[in-house]
Image (tube, rainbow, N blue to C red):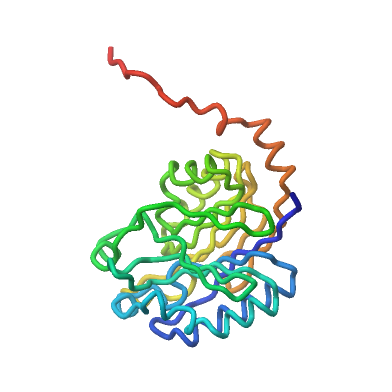
Length: 267
């Protein structure tokens, strides 16, 4: 298996302005393509912005490819697969979903956020009922959205299924940096896999909050290979499969996990 060059991208998204947000995604995709990136992931709800007004008017899942036409063209031009997160409307309700734009121009929506966070999300969305991975250049890439990454078993299930990279599209507010910088390195170290976190940045239209950014790529020991603060841009890193194998050999927590801890006793 060859080295895979990936990028976590971040830039402010404008609440409800899909056209402008798609244009920003196109710009980040072209930057990534110019640097030889094969997989680019963007933050949570990037298509519409993370805001109640946009959530209420989420596009139907079948309309997403038409909205993404400029991005589809950029992906074909650059050869960079893009994971773009968006609220979408389905028959069973609205979901916060990972939208994958493949280099052949196809658009898929294979994953819906399983762990909804707070009243804002729980009052507007339904939770996904399954995990999902995609394949990029022979690498199995697991998909997750923000709060999913707070649960060790979510990344564990992906690693058990063969994922070598766990991608999370997130949105942390300023003040939550410690949690952000704990969860994702821990998911990498827990499982001996690479983790990519793409974090929202800029002002939030919901209240007076500000997004904390912090997009990063972590190696299988949880060390940052590339990381941003709150500026717009790309965190680019090369993922070496040999490093993953060496880390798992030295720190075999993934293999050594006990399937059953037995009956807990109290003295």
